[in-house]
Image (cartoon, rainbow, N blue to C red):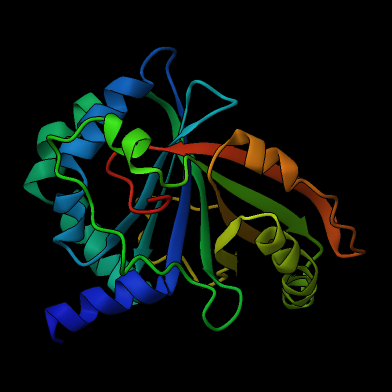
Length: 245
């Protein structure tokens, strides 16, 4: 496969996405972010995955949230095998693991409809030497919201259609941008060394806002007989995150 074509496909489509939420030891988030942004971006992408975004949770100071994408489940297996069996992880895993309490809160996802994956084609990543001032000086969105809608089994498609019709126009009218929309990927986990949450039906909307005021203006209650509960993650991208730039 042409590497350039493969990279373009990953950047444009994100056919398989992991949403990873890590609970960290108190005061260790900045340590992990510095290590991650320096050592774990290019080294993972060299194996064929895309590091989509890394975030500080604005409401939970000891949570680190990140997203990565794969071409398909077999490519996920190959990329994860290469990275976690490779020299960069071997060198830095002890330092990374020392910051964490739990790293198993992982949802495996796929786009909710055609074209609902992340389009990262116009998002150049700052160099590792850049600082957090990059985001503040750029005028780019500073808040990314991930809403996780827990649904009754088998209702994801209907809920996605309903949210697409109701919510997307309201977001656009308030100056927000839907960055991606996803539902559960129920395929068997192809890399058992890293567990994922199974037996859950979710719809996830990822939205970008310029600031907290814009995010507050766009809050509305989505009612649906399919919906069990909703979690809202309010996130701030790190300086090297592609998503939110």
